[in-house]
Image (cartoon, rainbow, N blue to C red; front, top):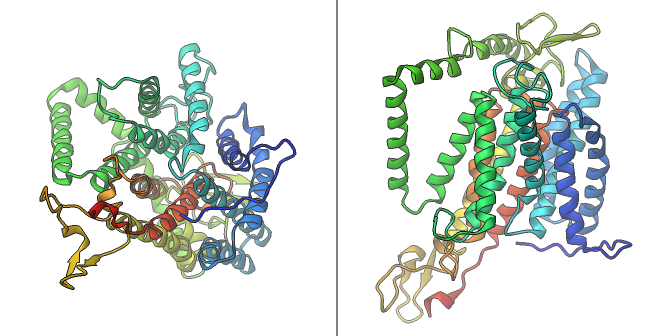
Length: 475
């Protein structure tokens, strides 16, 4: 990876690397504070934190082709959103939200990028303090029953603790759980009961509490997104993909069978899935059908960023009036993008994400092959595939350093693990966004956290591209 040579020096001679780590962790805490009514004043610290991060980025990042390309990619959508203010129903609103979007997205992107550049082994550890705080608050709420609306607020169908809504708490847990998975997978024999350590015990307890509270929120989308994340991660990272797929399929069949055969379990599952509606997607369709009609009206260029069609209404609980302006709960990020910024805006938002995911996947392949696809025998001149080289004595297949993600200690290559988890996480978050319209909300708690991951993915993408073949393993 390209290492950043930090030029900043603090008055107290604190390590500049730690300054970046503290800034990223503090920014994440500032973001999630908005979801907790008693602590939401901390959110106002976000902009100053991102401004300091931007100053560090400008001072330390070279204006090379990678950084220039990244800035252009993340700026495309907010610049188009800014242009939509020319024909928006509410020009001032579209202008203000577009500028705020650019500040939030660029700041969080480079915060994630900088942190990963100075912490290669644990590139998303800045999410850990925020996750621990949320779990601590949730456990306190479960034990004490405070606040009184911990179970009766929001949609009244699950636990919300001190947060403003069950789905919000669930989405924040979903967006921060990957850091726990990464730290567990970094452990020596993470699934072995014989290899005990307090770090391992603490991480597994933390993961268990996350899953428990996630289930108690009754957020179906977040739970399904977590399952998708784990499934994709296993299929990418596991050396025995067919075996892993078979075990996952067997577990799914077993759970389905238990659910269908045991009446109390069947009743509980139906209640959980339907949430009081006749159809599983009943509460989503209430939001999606008006959003589909509004997206048709958005057409190619959209109605204006941040705008809801004034004549298309929804029965969603989040729909309301702000003065004379109607704000509709949209329930789907892609439809919301098209309604507000048109097909053009939707493509300018989604295509950069696909670009990062594709290049991140390519970087995994580069890590696995050590940056080469073949090796030429210096004696015979024959070209051998990098994956087909065998040890001269053991007869086992070997490969350049980093191939198959294996390090000299037999552990997975750190970039391979991180990149695999990032692909799985981003895929799960993109799926989640199709049930909540947070892609168009610069003031939402999910969007900034999402772009922290995108910035981390960009840094890991460069790390994978810079992997190089070392011949020592063949000697």
